[in-house]
Amino acid sequence: MIFTKSARLQQLPPYLFLELDRMKAEVRKKGVDIIDLGIGDPDLPTPKFIVERMLDSVQKAQYHRYPSSRGMLSFRKAAAEWYKKRFNLSFDPASEVVVLIGSKEGIAHFPFAFVDPGDVVLVTTPGYPVYNIGTLFSGGKTYYLPLIAENDFLPDLDSIPDDIRKRAKILWINYPNNPTAAVAPPEFFARVVHFAKENNIIVCHDNAYSEMTYDGYIAPSFLETAGAKEVGLEFHSLSKTYNMTGWRIGFAVGNPELIGPLAQVKSNMDSGQFEAVQEAGIAALESDQSCIRKMQEIYSERRDILVSGLQDLGLDTPVPKATFYIWTPVPKGYTSKDFSSLLLEQAGVVCTPGNGFGQSGEGYVRMALTVSKERLAEAVERFRQIL
Ligand SMILES: *Cc1c(COP(=O)(O)O)cnc(C)c1O
Image (cartoon, rainbow, N blue to C red; front, side, top):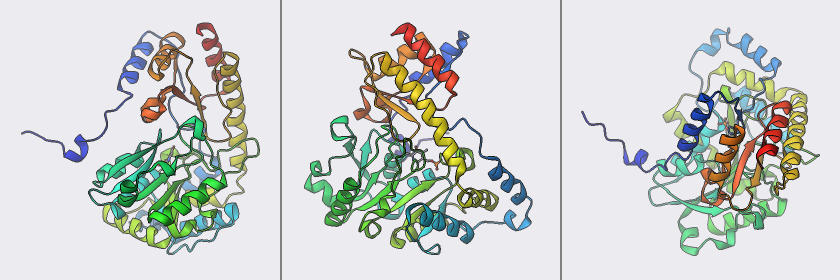
């Protein structure tokens, strides 16, 4: 037998971290105590009250049957209530909210609802790879919008040529941003709404990091922007907010004419998330949110240790207002890959070369604040010895 992978899979970009994974395994084999700042996955456990709701729920026979692909109405109500409390925005739980098996699932599936072969999808780069992958799987073509420091890591919408605007169906944006840790001012979102209306383009805002903010900064919802609900929807995740990456629970809210077709795709692809997990998600959304403040304190302490350490060593590292990423330019004379290889081989610290998130990420590395303060201080000390 010869198994030929579909053109769909064959066209996927090469996995850029292969080389890094190999080097990591080699360094580990030598017995080096590796500090891994490579992965954007919270190291802290899910808050206990959420786990306890799961323990209760898993015993309930009513949750053992197929869920609905749109999600439990009680979850959709809790998500709508959370948006009301957090952003003062109202959504109809019946038609304007859909539960997702992690927001990645919704992000990957959304283009199936609106993109035909030949359509263009506008994707910011460097960025979360799934915007491009979902586009490719649905037969669309990705047009990349570079995020560069000179533009505060916001895309230059004016630079998009007319023929691309005409063929574009979707614009993906993500603020607070992974991997650049940039945040968006309200004027930018207003500009996006104007652009979307002018060109008849759907706006998908990925708000996975809205709660991971520091120094009093409060991230907005894109849907707070005047006219935003006419053009778009917002993806939200419980993964980073409540340390629930393993649970696979998220949701999307927004224009019912966008939420409906996404739910229609899902009803043909999956049967929704286990209702006990949704029940645990309800516990998270309905809680007093004090666990979020604790998380913010922990990450901001870690951020200060790593950023001031890097700055002391002469790196031009900005202090991020949000996310658990440090996006730092590499020292002169290095590429992203050279610098991350040096840190791994000489210091035993793993970070991610910026070009792994797209060519525009060249010249940067991303470090995730997903290890303890002590380990970050240790990483800084090791950097000091080699830089
Ligand atoms: C982590 C992350 C997500 C999503 O996560 P799920 O666990 O699938 O909800 C979405 N977008 C970005 C930019 C992320 O970094």
